[in-house]
Amino acid sequence: MLTFEVLKTDPSSHARRATLTLNHGVVQTPIFMPVGTYGTVKGVTPASLEAMGAQIILGNTFHLWMRPGQEVMKSFGGLHAFERWNKPILTDSGGFQVWSLGEMRKITEQGVHFASPVNGDKLFMSPEVSMQIQTGLNSDIVMQLDECTPYETKGHITTEAEARQSMEMSRRWAQRSKAEFQRLENPNALFGIVQGGMFEHLRQESLDALVEMDFPGYAIGGVSVGEPKEEMRRIMAHTPHRLPAHKPRYLMGVGTPEDLVEGVACGVDMFDCVMPTRNARNGTLFTRFGDLKIRNARHKADHRPLDETCTCYACAGNSGVSWAEGGREGFSRAYQHHLDRCGEMLGPMLASIHNLHYYLNLMKEVRAALEAGMFGEFRQRFHAERARGV
Image (cartoon, rainbow, N blue to C red; front, side, top):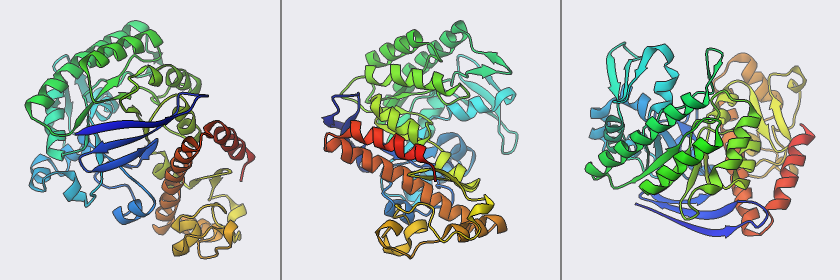
């Protein structure tokens, strides 16, 4: 089940405010979706995710197929009960992970043959297999199996002919994914994925074909795969607003806070990226006023929180009152610098909580700006504050 209702549009851009209703709940968009590759968002409990406002999270079909496997997942009735998350879940198709295996895999029209990165077993992933695994996961949003078109391979930039060949196979796989999804009588929603590399006319061909197949929602794939930022932004500006206005649009694997705000302006409703948690584990924190490197020695004795305007647990403690508003219960930069230098696991846990809260709160502010008819002003202020620096 999926229903999508656009509540407000921004006259100065393609941005819109909407609600997305799925089998496990309602999602307010635009939204950022935390990534839980192995059935968990690294270092963050489900209770913390709910407290910080997460409405929908991701699971990874490929990795959950490897471990714990289909039989275990079926015994729990799907991923929700297994990981104790009662809100919506989106699962990717496994296509990106298979693509990332490089020489360990062989792609054919039928599907992908590859060696398991876990134990070396010979395995086969096809559109039909992906649909069967995702049906067992009982994810609210299922993604078609596609071939992720690389920007370059071993220094060779993908040509138009290569991008076309990849896109056309993804289009055929979309048809097969839909047929198997329907055969399985999956009660959830299947999204098609627009491919076409860095070529707008190929993106349009892919888009037109998928719209004719009438998916409940659509994603833009094959971006953030090594291309220069200006190339990604060019495709982001071209594709989303050309998708049906009455259906949700998802930009896969993107990205920075700036990417999210500009993606919303281009008409995107849904985002995901590993960046908040990955950067947290590497000591990089996102703040309203730019990125903060907690490993820098200048933070060794700094009593301030990561972000004086933030109300996350790392910055405000249980009070939920920011430093700027008089709260003093959060953890200092000095303490979080100390945790990182000592390799204490609390360090990346607090950093992950902060980064995810920042992303989710950013989307909350975007929704509020759209509701107030002030998205243009918000967009300008956002970029000015981020450029100011910490």
